[in-house]
Image (cartoon, rainbow, N blue to C red; front, side, top):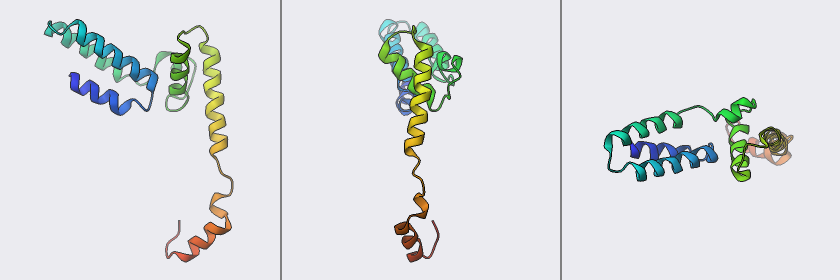
Length: 127
């Protein structure tokens, strides 16, 4: 169970760093506290597995954030601030940041630039 949890946390960390950092810290605390009591250790690890497989954090869902983009950013902002006191403002900020990244990341006319058209003509297949 421990190795499965560690693997899940490591492969999922980039999706939501704040959530999986917290889970990693909880895993280490459980292992340190219950290393002698196998039954309690198994129960605690199962509870942590249930938490790890939850779709999104309650706070980000509560604020209606997209769990794939805005939710993880919200989690990082909240982790940096260290409290839930400003969740509404942090949720709004996460939405604004994601929207700005989407605007800045959208290159207008990329597929119609002259150099790309020449490249397409040189190939026997289309892009």
